[in-house]
Amino acid sequence: MGEVLIRYKVMPVGPDVDLEKVAQTFATYVPDHGRVSRYEVKPAFFGLNLLEWGVVLDDKKGGGDELEEKLKGTDGVQSIEIIEMGLL
Image (spheres, one colour):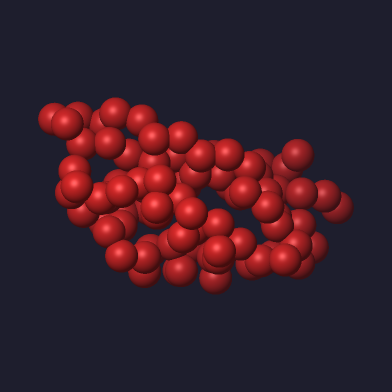
């Protein structure tokens, strides 16, 4: 079929979490049939920033569920939310 873009909103456990480092860690989780689309650190509220992180995966090979579980288990991550998912 094609490729799927998945964008996540990542909330850290606190304002002292290095979101650049979290994004680099996330990149190591991407399967061989995928690639990091982009990431951006954005202000959230009360001095806390969030990370918007996107990945492109081959929809025939899947892997999104496994990837999401790894993202959720990363040190410094409080929550993960899918904000966009669609075919490219």
